[in-house]
Length: 150
Image (cartoon, rainbow, N blue to C red):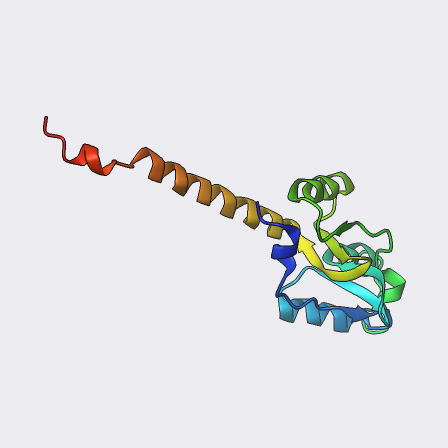
């Protein structure tokens, strides 16, 4: 199973400042094809802004995304994992919290963001590899047996 570290490694973690407008954040999310943005205040992680926040706190409340800052509508009850946590622990925590994105910390500092899609892709890769290995095992013909005449 892939480690959380290997899933988030070598990825840019796109963040926004807490004073960023919702419109600018939504445009950034759209341009990057991402569903969530960690929100920082300087170096400090202060929240997460997700597609769900856009729908529930902007659209449903008829707020103006041009004049509303992320700090007014971001989620501050953060679901986090440490970079060395197991795949199963992360998936369980996400399911329990009913979230699709989890912030990854490395010794208390933001190391990345993990989506449910990331975890499902890693799980699928592992299953594909297991199937390939099993197929190779089932279809393996030892060299000595290939010369046996019947």
